Length: 107
Image 1: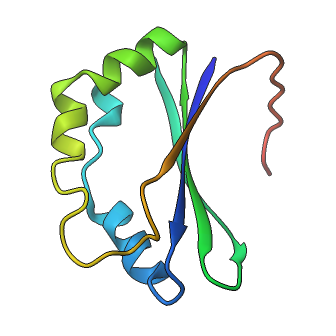
Image 2: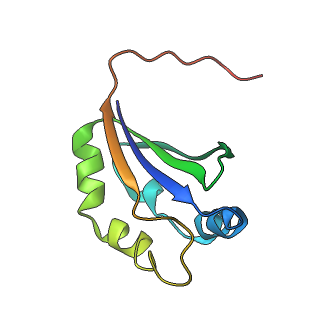
């Protein structure tokens, strides 16, 4: 498994707008080989920003890399950076190869 995360520092007061951008876009992730799941995570508000992380799980690093070079990726990101600023800067990418994973059924 490979986990790809982007961390975003969202300007205080712009959280709803930021979340709406993610809810309204068509990601096309489901079209990609090796795609497992996606979550948008929000931390508690800090003094000057709210930290969000996009968290995508892939079967392996190669499938994630294929996503980043795909037409689907270009299409999903075509409007990134348009409109008023919602973040304090560019996202920070972190990629992880899973060493150990355990899943438990959610009731």
